[in-house]
Length: 167
Image (cartoon, rainbow, N blue to C red):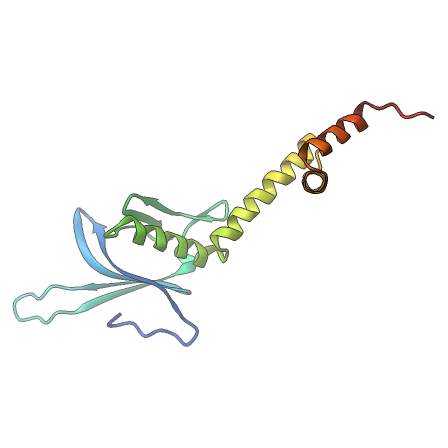
């Protein structure tokens, strides 16, 4: 980053050269993702007697659009589309690995949760739905299967369901 000074509480999370797609042009750009901002540094070409100048665009992470609390950052092969409040941005990476690493870091910065935490939340919501709709206590089921074995626990539960209690 030639023209951007990091703030004292700002940390670089991802950095890579990309091509920014704008109006059918591929503009070489240095992309830096920090814990606070998306930073795009584009070097302007030398034209006649004018010197080369860098153009720096800093977009705060809060400017990323969200749908149902999820950031609008989509990866397709080596390209990534980021929907910001004022405009959408399409960037192309050299390879899928860099694109995926960028998306993972960007989602973590915007949501404040890691991939593991987001997947854990999805699993918890699914288990809660099963508990609620089917009236199956998943925690008790898992504990019984671990301590008594799957077949032993299922047989015991089946016997409990079909055994009549004497009054």
